[in-house]
Image 1 (cartoon, rainbow, N blue to C red):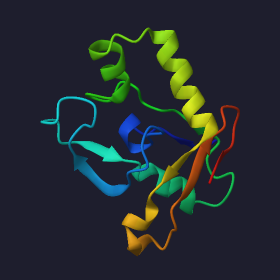
Image 2 (image 1 turned 180 degrees about the vertical axis):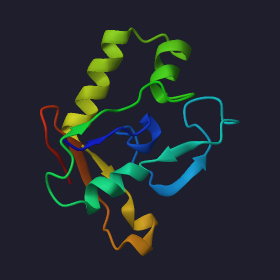
Image 3 (image 1 turned 45 degrees about the horizontal axis):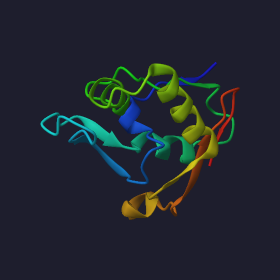
Image 4 (image 1 turned 60 degrees about the vertical axis):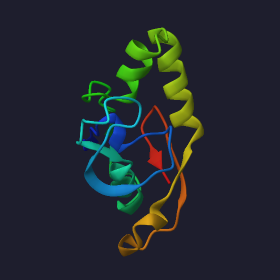
Length: 120
């Protein structure tokens, strides 16, 4: 089996932002944290052949993650946040790959299925 375990900001269904940089400020809170990403792992999923990854495990414990912000700062109940997150990932989100022309990818929608396949 081949797995992928991105920090939440590196595969973030809440935004279409895209950058290959992994040294960006956190989006939801603590802008002084300069190690967040903008869907960088979405490029790995888009460029890999279909069925390359058997399992994608999103790291919600990333420092100053969106999950932490929603639970701690906004006081969203855990069950409500997880339902929101799963819904966003299952429905899919647009990723602005065109912001990095060197990849040769057009902006497109991404979705993560929770029983095996990830697709673009």
